[in-house]
Length: 147
Ligand code: THU
Image (cartoon, rainbow, N blue to C red; front, side):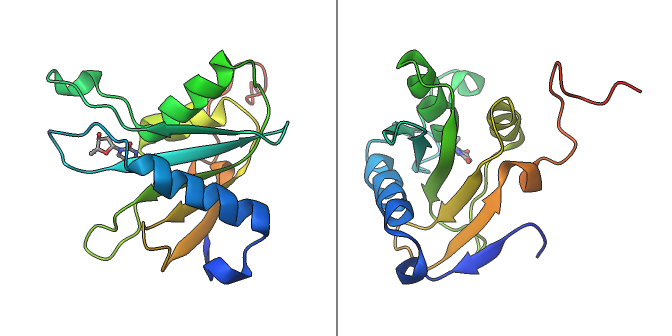
């Protein structure tokens, strides 16, 4: 495994534990009648507040939005622009921890590089990675390499 390390929940800092718990809690609000796959995301903003989001699905499947983008959009609408960390909670799939889809990786990469905590609802496995690890060499207007 590259770009991430598993950490025991108990060994994480208090503020990270709080963020992880928030992502597990908001996951319960998921509107996912089609996939039945609930996802929660909790984004720590630089003023210390947490912006939470869940996936919201739609009869027209591609219209659905992921938990990560819901949390970020909510933070932006609340006037937050700098983020410190994000936790994403979802079931494992065939024993593999769930990680953000490509669209969410790009959405995250628009802002500053932050640690990403991926957790199952039971917190048995918490994988710490980062935006840059999950989307290296990402496209960014203004800061991408032009030569
Ligand atoms: N989903 C998320 O909300 N975040 C992820 O990181 C992966 C996938 C949602 C989208 C859809 O509602 C459901 O999970 C199944 O793909």
